[in-house]
Image (cartoon, rainbow, N blue to C red):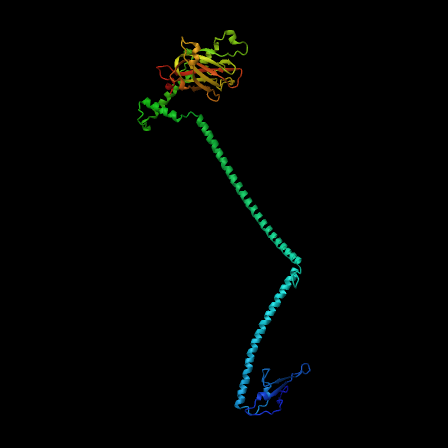
Length: 458
């Protein structure tokens, strides 16, 4: 045994001596006092600690038992049995102590977690400026807190909305810029294409103008030419005209003959149509309105109302395009009455004025005109003439067209009706209020029993 440890046997309160009898309970009658002496620390002895054990080793050591004298009769069966029972009890207590330790550990961990959560919550409240313990004491404070929270939330939302608006504005500006660039590029391309089309249109207009100004025959004229060529070579209409059967030299010769005939016909009278109001053919002016005298005298007062001016025959003669070779009548309205060379069926009339290329002033040309006709015999009553008058034509002379303009008559009233008197009346001219000039007036038709002059021309 070490010097710091001693074991003292103590008797029971009844001072019974230990006995080895089988009926004796060693645990109830024996107490062991174990004294452990601590070593000195820094020269100061430590206090002794005495443990009193009632038949148990509370320190879970056999140090106190190691110094006890082995009792007598220790090898008896009853003592062995009691010793076994004594040894089993500490093991059960040890297991229970481990369960308690684990439970205590879990409890402490929960308490620690709770304390840490409370500390975190308290730190958050201190950061937010809220009271550490308790909430707002009054409804006003609660309302203020809610308002502050709403303001803060609203501010945050406003910031987010501003950011979104800014982003949307940026995207819109970018899209607008891209769209504007695309529109500008497209507009530039379209303008370029339009300029190209305008250039092509100008070329087309120029081509059409040149084509219209050229002497190319129309389809109708070409068909008439083919028909005349058929008649010339004696080919019937049912026979197909093949280019393989036609000689180019023959076509040229025939075309040359046609051109010569046309030149000859137009050289004769300009139109190539029979004129039944020609002075040299026997036609005469029998009546007219007041002639233009330049305001010197009244011609009818001097000569008489039934007289005919000497220049009146110019209306029935070729002027050969010479300016001034006309019959001038006073004012912007007037008339002339013409007796034809013979009684005919009227088909058309022609009014001629000086050509634009050689005229000094064309404002004296007649504009709105009317043609009437009737038949007058030697024994006819002049007072009954109004019943015999037939309306022939009503037309407007256009200065933008050719100088000799032909107008067809109204055949619904004059068809196959013979006339020998024609009256040309005009109600206006092209701007000259002093006088109106008549260069030439022609009447076309045919006599009974003769072919139509217009048919012959065709």
